[in-house]
View 1 (cartoon, rainbow, N blue to C red):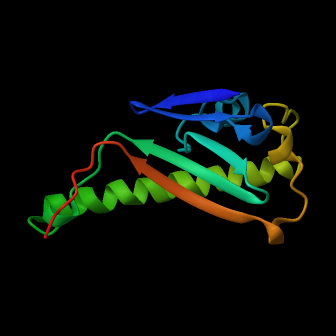
View 2 (tube, rainbow, N blue to C red; view 1 turned 180 degrees about the vertical axis):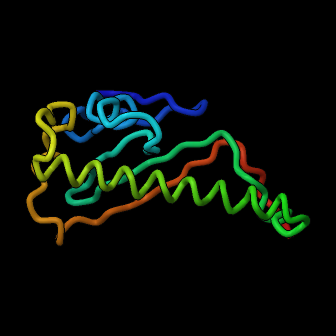
Length: 135
């Protein structure tokens, strides 16, 4: 069982058979610099696969339109999160289609997915210190 520390939070206890530590994997390292990924991928509760990205903070949506600079930073922040989700999904799909020589880092339950039509993909952003706006 693994607990995954990330961005000042702890995730898990997860069985290694259900995990792909994509961000620290050899598969990822061999792809080279510049490819953004999520923290980890987890298979849980049957056919659910979660792509989890953790952050300590995020831009305040209430201030988004105060200036062009804030609007640009807001768009860049969420654009980069989307890019991480897409890249991670592509790496994972390539791995389960045997496009890499060694996929032993990917948990058995994630590697053995054979029918993607039955899988529910969930892309989750967890932010630790976001203040909640009260109206």
